[in-house]
Length: 390
Ligand code: SF4
Image (cartoon, rainbow, N blue to C red; front, side, top):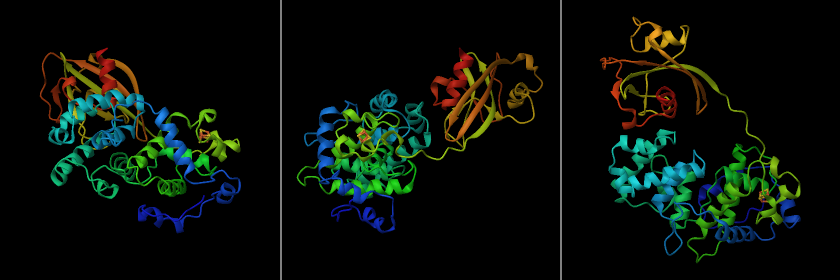
């Protein structure tokens, strides 16, 4: 990789350079003339992006071509966990309910979680909400314009801070996500795994080099380059089947020349799954159901029917134990089979039972009789309720 002297990029980007001794093809890149000028790739990407970018609801720009920071922020957080097509309806609904940072900051948490419901990773919604409150307190509802200041807000990491700072404020800082790492690894034919820290560092350094080539009088250039890299990774430089024939960088791409495009970056190490068996009891009176708010683990604050980890007892007995209903006969339970769900590194098999009652029995477990449509539910609870209400 050609590392040019960099001006105007964050010290942190330069600071990592001495420690980084990657297997990078710096000589071959220069020697084969693949990167004749460092500025050619950013220029080609920006031209391609101007012509080919998808129309997405968060891509709203002002007269100077700068994105709206609030929309960028919400979209980037949502996009960390879900595909673009799936995010669009959630994003549009979220913006309808909370059109700006001020409205969002003043909202009740239960309303925020409801608007987020279905996206998963509810901790992110809470952090987002906490960050909105801080924006009101410290910045009167506006956004600080630098990645360094944005990173001080809850839930905003290096990636999101760089995205907001470059897209909305023109800071020359590279965004590095999975798509960007894939594109850069292939361009330089780096034999590194997708989750290798060296790849992250190298992509960040290369991004800084490209940022330094952008025209100084174009405020929107940094954001355009970042969006173009991400867009190329999302639509052309695809993980399994890169569409090299239509890629604007095909003449510069070493992985393509080596016939290694689909193999790079190298695969991540396999995830270690934890398998859990759980039993859920959906205890109903009419349309109301006993629901408990989760306190820890995944999706804290969201609601689920009471559940228990399956140990020695039978699933039906566990369902009765759940509500202190051991005096009832298991014959009173309706068996709805098994629901499968994965969250973070957990693979869950959930045995689902329901019990229909005529009166709302008081509980000591903290669970409440609620209409499930009125509260935010975990993804697993939605699946469990769907099968019992079907
Ligand atoms: S030529 Fe192919 S592998 Fe190389 S950047 Fe373009 S799409 Fe990716």
